[in-house]
Image (cartoon, rainbow, N blue to C red; front, side, top):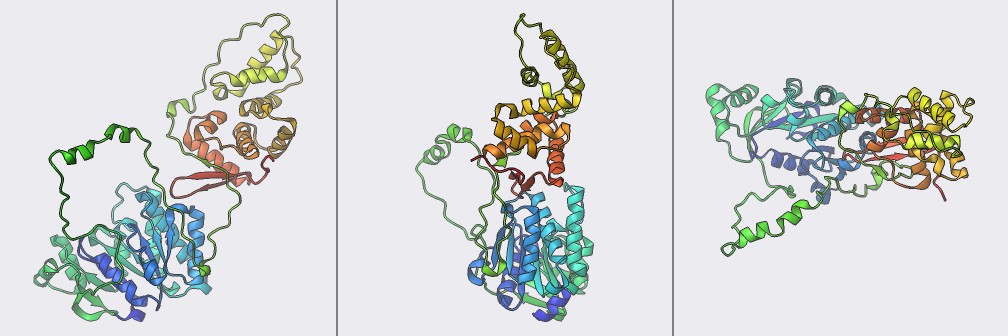
Length: 481
């Protein structure tokens, strides 16, 4: 295969599952390793073994945030590092979004980093589907744009796309049409054989040959392969994937009833144990020429996502409780104590501020406590201090936290104070359910918008990786000694 011509004309590989596509890609990568930069988008984690034999850097996508993935892609182009983007620890839609971000960042690299590179995308029908399926519309637009840029406009930027798919019918036409080199493996459906034969310039009778191809056999055509269709046998490789063995393996021998006992032993105990969280392993130490991915400030404990709460509660204010009974004469109290009583009442944060303020005024009159100097704005701040627990801290902590929260809108104050308190005391951050309660909403999406708003203001830094873990850093306040 003419490598220089391949860089200019791109390659499309098609074949049914088991036809040897991954084996062909591995052979190609091994034979040109060291001659050209290689970037592999690997949804199944099959190509990570290239790191041991050829020094590829393995990027475990689940361990990085979207912004870090983009920065890594930029550095990959800058330092001409051969990498494998391993996506196997992510859910399908997360895989697609991660690959789209990575490919887009490769494409958007500055002109001085437009070095030649092979970009291999296995299972390309996932990242450039011909039909929408169950994928989110935004995700589909993002990934189609990234794959189209790679195959249509990548050549001038030094990016040579090599895409492998099970069926041409599953792959977006704009992506498939830009390849000038083709390697067609075994396929059985008439429509797929006919499309493959059309690409190879074969008639219908010759198309029958495609059905008879063995594993590892392909029909090739293109300027980097041959000007006429030619039979290709893929040779041996030095590395192997992490898939299961293909050969037959004898079944284990067991006495009668022993296998059933092995399957059912302590089954109830195992079923009741907490399920392990699907999580990517920590990223390997990168090579010196790749640099550290991103230097992050001290990160506080993760905010664990919770299951969505029922929407009907989200925006419906709860009815105000009955007017509290008058206390015994002489019970007295302070304004802060009355506000704390209101804040501790069940569902208080879901009630309108005007209703809470009216309740506050009634309680003050019943206890003969002057409250005329407390207007609605001041009451809302006092309520936020009480419901977040700030009024339970020492004066020094209250002063530091209140100063850091200066200027925050009244309706956002309570959840932001809870975040500041956790940062100051070093305790776990409030989860989505607790933030929703303080915010007065049971809608997870509103809580996420709240965090995004605070981040845009520069008051917090939210880091959420593709594995689903979220952490919050508060740069404005130091931890308690």
